[in-house]
Image (cartoon, rainbow, N blue to C red; front, top):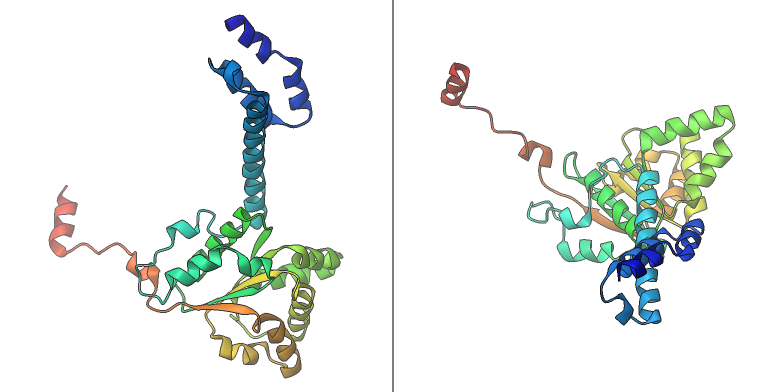
Length: 265
């Protein structure tokens, strides 16, 4: 049995699998060959198990690459860890339905609004990870940083490539929308981005500013109408409520008695 296993482990088929980049199949081949009941499995069962392993490894590698490219602010945020117990107006059923990803397939948008500290960015990153799990490309950007990148790209000749990158990513997450009034160039840049993405890709936007105030924030009514028409009418909205969750996590200050006890130790 030992000699048979060694022969199978050194079989040239393994070298061919490695040469073709089929590391998962090669690993499954080795493990199957080391099992005492390997001879009891049919050729179809061997092939099925090897293909399953290869598919799983490729899916894991693809997810790792997508998450690395996404540059999420909270890399560990995920749907499973969402806190539904906190009173912030987050509906469990609606959230889990969004996690299924139908809105991504339909090229719809998602808008998360709420006061600072209510968890908008973390939730956006959780949806970003979920989109990557569903095999969508993702990119996270803070809007102030986006405008800086666009301005720099215009100076060094990268502007068309950057616009193309923003247009192609399947889920673009724009965090901190509406923190300041836009200038003329920024309005035109946003219009170009959303025009390229309209009905082709999905965008997730987080903002402290309520949607009703976005028109005034953008300024220039004609351009504001054009931008918002491409964002809002096919967008799902989640309005987070309540106090800052950061404030709830601040450690309780020591009492005078505890402080005295600490100082004496």
